[in-house]
Amino acid sequence: MKRTNRQAEQELQQDLAVVLTELKKPSLTEQFLSQFLTQTEVQALAKRLAILKKLHQNYSYAQIQKELAVSSATISLVAQIKDSEIGEQMIESLSVHDWATKTARTIRSWFAN
Picture 1 (cartoon, rainbow, N blue to C red):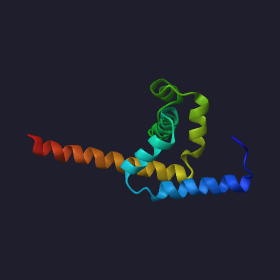
Picture 2: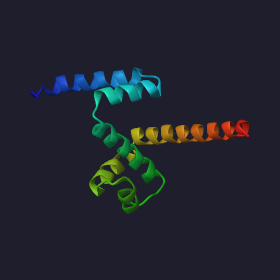
Picture 3: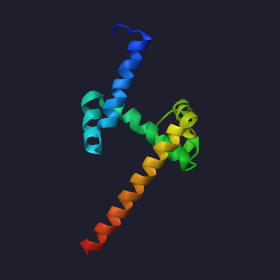
Picture 4: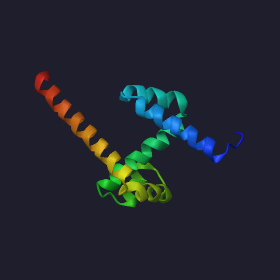
């Protein structure tokens, strides 16, 4: 791919950010990711989020490496953003999603019996 200048690259990244922001439903975001990225690229992003979550839960690098089959370099890269504003926002979003999923399962189980 021909190299673009820095300003053009920034504009492309801003366009991507706008599109991702406008996809309000997780199902639309999943569809976008699966159609625009390879399975390997989607998996790499998902693993980085999982690393962030496990670091927040105080997993060791060794535990994360074993469970997710990732390198310590990848864990270190994610660890650098863990305490940043964006890292904290992602952790909060994941925590809310986990809570909502568990609550929904519990409520469904009440009516299943």
